[in-house]
Structure formats: structure tokens, C-alpha cells
Length: 477
Length: 86
Ligand SMILES: Cc1ncc(C[n+]2csc(CCOP(=O)(O)OP(=O)(O)O)c2C)c(N)n1
Ligand code: SF4
Ligand code: SF4
Ligand code: SF4
Image (cartoon, rainbow over all chains, first blue to last red; front, side, top):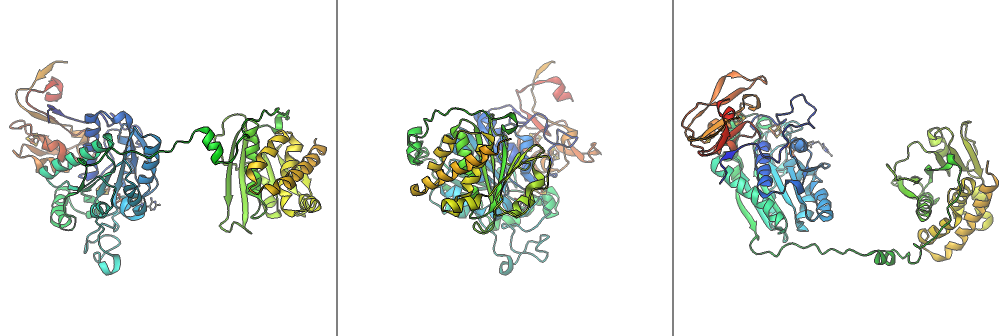
């Protein structure tokens, strides 16, 4: 330690503006909580390596859920247990960043067991800090997978019994059984010597990532005085007397001297390759004439609803893709019941001249109803001045609203006349385009080529689009 | 602001940022940190440096879970006078 002053790390915010409480200077942790010590060691390392500006900390669910109040780095708070998966995505998108997954034992060893195992097994170039306090702190002291045999918690009031609750999971040992991890160590915060070791391990786990060496995990035996109902000094004694036996401290894996710097075998297809992979060659050079649509039909937010098997999702995808071919910003968000076929299905489509904010459409300007329950369910959500288009051969009621435009098309009957009931969806889509003139018909033809996998069905779908288009056009207001 | 070069190591504990956990007191080898008899505005008996015999070892800094409660100034450190007197 060459430095002559030990003080608050620069990688912490000066004041914790994100904390809604009035006190912006004092972290929310209980007195004597080990999360604070670990935070300090991480922040100091980020300062010393000069990497705070390119670091991204993933906060877990647990007492450290608010780590993003404190660290002046990039911050993301992940769903319970998912931090290593989120970290993987970030690291792969930003390989030059330093990504730290910070997790408690409930988060990492219970709900997140799969995520940590697979991230470690893939050898992601990440740093994981695993704060093992043998309990769920945040929720009030329930048993964690790391709770010791015999340890009393609110959910093991008589003490953890292996026959009932299993044995404490030894994460450092478990992870070090895998091939890929580079560095796995368990440390403890109980005294000056061991804190110094913990500090060195934390620095090493970060440095490994900076040096591109691969996956590092440090398990930290850490006090939770509140959960254990002990004072802070006794909590440290409790770790030494009880946790150390079950969770031996030490290095479980250290390949830092042997490994080659980590390389993601990254396949970055260029745009030609993507076009080939998606089998859409030649279809990206459309020079479509834009269409004149009346202002009220511009930037539609569309909900398409019916039952599974009616091609609801396909209609939405084709519509969105057609919009894309006509140079709009589009989104398509499917939403269906667990049944897939036979259940209800709906999807949300945006076709906009500016970027799409949210793909969700809860108040549609256009409702396409393909069965009666959908019409009944969503009619009232349509914004005034919007459009409802529905299949009048399947739906024996009419919309009650008078402040909207209604286009009733006997789509299923028309589809039967053309020769296939299942093209009713394309009839309705054609009718919508014909009615509003939102897109050139050619854009729809193009989208059919990619949306419909079996080429022999393309022709009949085109026929359906045509018939629907003419129907819609002849009903224009 | 006068800058002073320390001839003796010292520490500074911010009473309002101390949670009174006592871990620094437990950790300090020469036993030069004590609980103050007063409470801070949060209701914690905060810790304070008795004013002499700090060796500047730094272990209280790492024992303390709070980011800003303790600062340690080793011999030769250059610090603003206010920090030390405060
Ligand atoms: C999906 C989900 N399930 C359960 C919870 C409730 N929950 C919040 S924190 C927590 C456990 C936290 O324990 P740990 O990871 O050990 O962190 P600590 O609070 O001890 O630091 C649980 C189960 C939740 N927030 N989300
Ligand atoms: S409950 Fe436990 S883990 Fe949570 S802040 Fe308090 S001491 Fe820390
Ligand atoms: S720096 Fe060392 S000697 Fe000085 S107060 Fe802290 S622990 Fe005690
Ligand atoms: S360790 Fe920190 S919070 Fe705890 S008593 Fe000492 S200065 Fe206060």
C-alpha cells in the first residue's frame, strides 16, 4: 500500500442521489453488515486499476439490490438470480468493459443456481462476487441454501435439518469442479489478516477480467448481524466458529498463470451472410413507391386478436415486415396462451415513421378482431377515431362503439370461396391495407415470401391479399 | 485551506456517517478508537479516535463497512488542516 491516505473510493458516488431517503450520505445497510466491506474493497480496486469508467455492476435481488445507489459505474439491476446471465449479455456486447456480478447466497445459490453454473461453465470473462451470509437478509432471515446444519432461521426455527432441508451448498467447491473457471477463492471478513486476504482476492478477480483471463468467482463469508440476531463483533466470531468449518477458506482454482487470454469465438456475420442465413437474398433492394395515406391512418398501433391456429401471429409478422420493406419503423410483439393452438392469440404491431418507443399496444388505433371473444374483449380499448376490422363471417355481433370506423369483412367465407379457410388472415390484412392505403401492396407480397415458409402456399396467400385489398379499397371512406 | 504534512499518523471518523458497529474498535491493534458517550443524530454511539498512538496501519479502514466513516492518514500524508482538526 503505497498510498498515504485511505479514504472513500472515487468509484463511489459522492452523494447517493438515487437513494430516495433523505440521507444521501449513509448507505442503507445495517450496522456491521459485510456488504459494506465488500463494496469498499471493490470500489478501491476499480479506482486503483482505473477501470471505473468502463465497469458495469450488476446488482442482484437481496440487500445489495441498491448497490447502484453507491457505485459510480455503469449499473444494471437484474431479476433475482439472473445477474450472471445479464452479465454475459453485457460482456459479449461490450467485451472491453469490466462486468461484475454481485450476488448474495439466496440470489446466487437458490433461485440463480442455473445462471451461475452455466456462466461459469461457459467460462465467461466475468467477475462474480458471491456474498455468503448463510441467510436471506433482505426478506427477514429465512434459510438460504448456505444456511448451516442446525442454524436457526425464521424458516428453520428448530435449526436446519439435512433430512428436511438438505446440506449447505458449497459454491466455491461446486464451481471449481467445472472445466472453464480460471480463479475461484473463498475468503472471510472475520479479522484483519483475513480481510487483507479478501481484499487481495477481490482485486485479483477484477484484474483477471481486465487481463481477459476468464471467469473468476470470489465467495466472501460475510456477516449479517440483523439476520443472525447478533451484534456486529459477535457476528464475526460466529463466522469464525461456525462458518469456517463448513466453508473452508482458501483457493479452489487458480489458472491465472497458465491460461491464454480469453477469446470469444465470435461469429460476426456481415450483412450478406445474414441475408443468406435468413434466406431473403435479393429482397432487400426494393424501391417501393410510398403510398398516400390519410393522416388519421398514419403511425398505427395495431392489435390483432383471435384464436390460436387462425394465423394471428403470422398476420402480424407479415404486416410488420411489409412495413419494414416500406421503410417504416416497426415492431411485432406476439402474446399467446400456453395452448398455442386452440387458445387465444394476439399480437401487437407498430408501423411508425419514427422509432417505436414501446412494442406494447394496450390502446390500439386499429383492432383486427378474428373471433367474437376478441372483439368483445378489446373493443373498448380502441382509441376514439380508431378502426375496428373484423371477420363478419365468424362474428355474429357488431361493435357497439359509434366513435370509430368499422370495416366488417366476411373473410372466412371469402377464403373458403378462394379455396382455403386458413387464408382468412391474409384477406383481413389485405382489407386493412386496401382500406387505409398504409402500404404499397408490393410490400405485402414481399413479406409473404419470407413469412410463409412453404413456397407453394405463397400464391394462394397473394390471392387472398388481393381479394382483401380490393374489398378494403371499395369500402374506403 | 492550509495543507499540512503529517509527522504522526492519524485517522478521522465522521460522527454522522458512523453506525456504531464497533468493528474498528475491535480491529485497532493499539486500541486507540473508542465509542463516544454521545449519540449521533441517527442514534448511534459513534466511534472516535482518542488522539494519540495511531500507527497508521490502516486496518480500521477495512474493518469499517461504511464507505466514508473512517479515513486513515499515514505519516507523511499531505492533508488539509481542517480534516485533521475537525
Ligand atoms: C423472483 C423473486 N423471488 C423472491 C423474491 C424475494 N426475495 C427478495 S431478496 C431474497 C433473498 C435474498 O437473500 P440473499 O441473496 O442471501 O441476499 P442478502 O439479502 O442476504 O444480501 C428473496 C428470496 C424476489 N424479490 N423475487
Ligand atoms: S439484513 Fe443482513 S445482509 Fe441485509 S443489510 Fe442487514 S446485515 Fe446486511
Ligand atoms: S490506523 Fe491502525 S492504529 Fe490507527 S486507528 Fe486505525 S487501526 Fe488503529
Ligand atoms: S467500523 Fe465504521 S461504522 Fe463501525 S463503529 Fe467504526 S467507524 Fe463506526
